[in-house]
Amino acid sequence: MTGVTIAAAADELGLSADTLRYYEKDGLLLRPVPRSTSGHRQYDEPDLRWIKLVTCLRATGMPIRDVRRYAALVRAGDGNEEERLALLHAHRESVLRELAQVTAHLGAIDHKIGIYEHKLEVLEQSA
Amino acid sequence: MTGVTIAAAADELGLSADTLRYYEKDGLLLRPVPRSTSGHRQYDEPDLRWIKLVTCLRATGMPIRDVRRYAALVRAGDGNEEERLALLHAHRESVLRELAQVTAHLGAIDHKIGIYEHKLEVLEQSA
DNA sequence: GCTTGACCTGGAGTGCGCTCCAAGGTGGAA
DNA sequence: TTCCACCTTGGAGCGCACTCCAGGTCAAGC
Image (cartoon, each protein chain N blue to C red):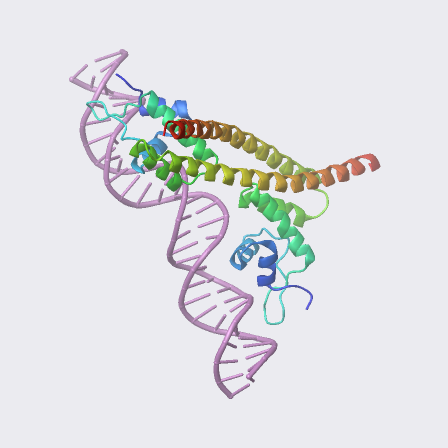
């Protein structure tokens, strides 16, 4: 046995087995995960490392289709590093924009929270 | 004319008219928006202010159903301020968790970007 | 009076990202 | 050997948040 089962991989990665099969079918992985003689998937270390990167991209909001494009570039081998870098850079920028936006909106919510806290404090004192 | 049209409201809020109708039908607003004699919606300032808050909540990832619960509390009037505050606090915490997670994952992506940049730099020099 | 265009309604459709299901094969323990 | 949990596949279904559409109403301008 040279790799781990889909259940073990799912457990380690914090994904469901269904999601792992879906990612593979959808072209997000670098290769079809190798199978045992009985057809069971066997994930090895590089597979797991790649999927960890995929979860980083997904968790920061990269759409499946962009992850697929990135995976395709990596699969294509050396020579397209600029393109990969451009994709990552673009994603980085969009994440930063999103973070700034969420932070700004969170400020407004904090303000609202402050108002309620003050209101309740006053209510408390007059009770 | 005491309020603005749905098109003007949509424009000011950065939402589509369809979305505004959807929010109203779904119970996200504090009241059914008043209509002109011909049945056209007329948004006034308080309506717009409320919807701005709704967009803050939505933009920070609060699900529609929670916004609806919050709207219901506000509609219910004075006396449930603790509950509103609890809802906002819970949301705030979840936003902070999300921000931390995204920031952490972004760090991993930055690291990857650094690797590619170094690679390309070396390639550049040896060319 | 007629056209134009913004608005109305109820309801269907869309895109995304999974998630679940049925039907069947596999592998280690009792 | 017989479980039983785990795996396989293709494909259907789901929840979310819109987004679009058909068919109709109304007010204003020409």
